[in-house]
Image 1 (spheres, rainbow, N blue to C red):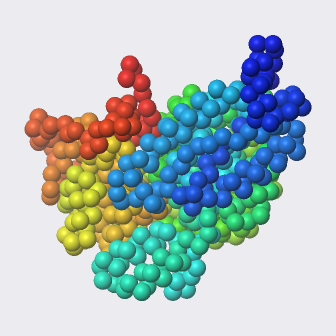
Image 2: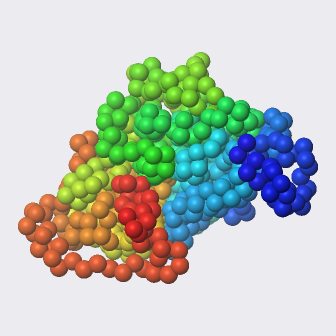
Image 3: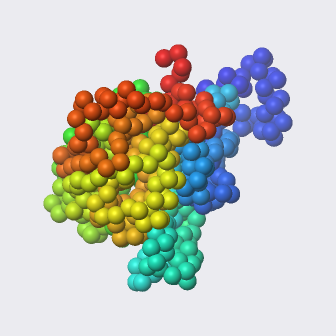
Length: 557
């Protein structure tokens, strides 16, 4: 066993004394040591129940003959961090999570790992760690929140509340109704109830083969979630015995499968940041160029919030991720031969997984869209690429031309939106919010929600080198690469320049000739990041572009 490095032999007598100090018996030291990496904390609603998930996992490990040892991982609530300096500290935690887990697992020589994430950066961070460490690993998340109680005959959610703030500022919603929204939007623990980033990544963990069936969809408050955790604890012992490792599972074919499922589900645009980063750690090159090719042959089968009015609990009732994969398999667009954390192939896993609600999961012959839910655009604004959640864009905004309204920070843009300075037809450009320029690549849920709340989501586009929450809807185009901070063309756009967006043809351009752009480039001067101390200083110095997953690159590279 790997853990024998800290348990066996005369020279390990000091080590065993420390295990004695932990209260471990000789019998326990004869068994595999399983690290249970739990992201429990008391500030993230999606993580407040993870102590119960951890207890269930540990019971499962013990039942199967292993010895579980719980260790921590950090997590940030993106909702609480939104629209202030705190959001600069969200994406950056992905690398901290991966690095700290690598340290803990290697220092203590765990034989296997059970990862317990739930919310936004916690899931990809632990997947990155799993790929980097490459020891037997399985994932079980905390599960999604139930949808909010009905308002005006409709279920509600966090994205509805952000848009309600826009309605209030526009004078179309009074304070009493805003307070009602506030009280009803988030009724339980769990990751926010729509197909936002957390739920997107937990679903894609299933698609990658790293989580058991239901990992992405079983609601946090269901007892089935506890049973799932026990089964994950039992299953890790099988993976250890058979020596099935993350890189055996997360192959190039598995990442293409994940991107295909991503297109069908209509996942968050953040998945286009995280999947390449996870692939990078697995030694797999995942070029975003393939996203559009996959999209062309992948129908969009689900319209969960914010794209539609259904929620994760509905997807779970309809059959979950495996039912979606079974629909896609009927088209022959998945590679179902790969091994998964079940010890079986994808084909074996999805066999018999029936779609029980054709409105929640549309059949492949009646999709919401014939192409996938995410589009990657290129043009003279974004030579390397940018990303939009096409499934959440109104039909009339799939193509749009309008004047640029240029802002050098999210804060300035919000002030202009709330002051009524943005009008129909405008294209809001928010720059210097990229990985280096932010630093930290903030999510822009507040400006997009304010625009939607004011009823302008079918008339106004937003382009940024920052990123968007999975809760964002509308013609919101993020991850513009190269970013403004390194002199990307988005830094050269001026107020009033005409910008054309063509999502069906994957194009985005500013109507300014190359010669004029070069004149502007000659005048451009780099800007110092707004935060130049602490972790963000080190992050800004090492982070790469969004189109490569915003991974960190050592300074000697």
